[in-house]
Image (cartoon, rainbow, N blue to C red; front, side):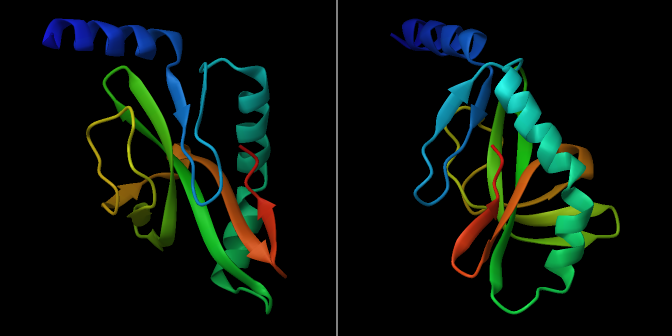
Length: 136
């Protein structure tokens, strides 16, 4: 039985290697690592990351719930998680995972993690009650 479960999990990982995690009312979705829409969304988020980080360090009135989405790799598996709250550190960033892992097994919900800028795949915050960012 364990062999069958491992075989099914291996097949799932091979067919859907990137897992984008839900947060709040978001739905969890699985996409291939070469999905063009997801690639474009991540590129957009990364292109505007500096502006977001500057805003998060001096939040104007009416803004809150600043968050980063980071990529976690565990062997051949990759999963993206929201990190809330987060902070800059001397070597990059750190924060708390805000989602339950469904694919990777090297992290847990609520874990404090450290990560680099290269691990960031998205960002978001609330402005006047509306979501900003969250490209993925």
